[in-house]
Length: 321
Ligand SMILES: Nc1ncnc2c1ncn2[C@@H]1O[C@H](COP(=O)(O)OP(=O)(O)OP(=O)(O)O)[C@@H](O)[C@H]1O
Ligand SMILES: [Mg+2]
Image 1 (tube, rainbow, N blue to C red):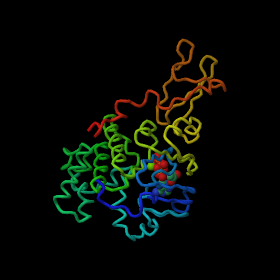
Image 2: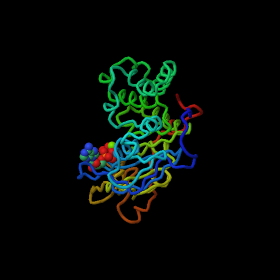
Image 3: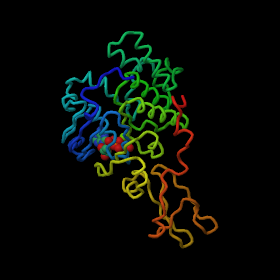
Image 4: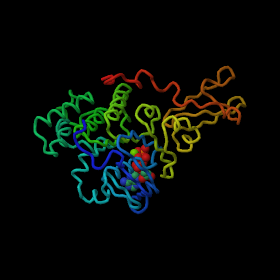
């Protein structure tokens, strides 16, 4: 899994961003001064609400668009030069991006053609191309879709095909934009475990998401992008997920204030979790509710309690398959 040698030493950063800005059409600010160093083998989650700049940052890391301000060195190259074509072939062999929208990634007549496209571009022998396609389709459990047309697939099937089309390149650096969006629970956790295994195999994996429940499984570091398009926090998953005020400020969980029978109370939700009414049970607050007074607010915030299924977050050797 590590046949493409990376430039430099193990401690040389993969990505080094200083003051990176990106403004669309001279008008829409998407990134507003990002300083970040990512080293080989790191498992990073980019956590941010809608519009916080996650996809823009991944496109910059993948050398698709150049920063409109600041500097980014990637694999020892100036990313602006890569965007202009300098060493772009080598760069894209080593860095692969799975787009948020699979329709951008899939353009061939069949899934197999899309998955084979990258290895064929590398000029690999037919046997090697076939082996890589089989491996990637197998990892995503979509061998049965190999001869289907991408536009005929369901959203989740397209997502898996798009990921397979990047994995077949066996890139050292895997960038994933909302990989678990729109997946059913089984597929989601199969994929989460795959992402974890990519990391365990030594890949550098950067995953953009706002789904908190996958973070402890796939990250050893979490970078929080705020709605001001700047980095709000950068730390260990437990530290970030345990910081309720940070998560509320970054719009990753939200706090509902309720008034029932004259009693005001509040409780946090994951940002994409639907709100369920009826927290008062026999005039008392229901499980998970927190009184909106200073003393009650000091009650411990338990990140993800009851959300993460422990049976899927601790795969045995080789994972669940
Ligand atoms: N093609 C574009 N043209 C103009 N503005 C854009 C374009 N793409 C994104 N933006 C703007 O840039 C900002 C960051 O968008 P981006 O897609 O990077 O956010 P995101 O964190 O990936 O959001 P989401 O969670 O919704 O995918 C947003 O304000 C968005 O409106
Ligand atoms: Mg996005």
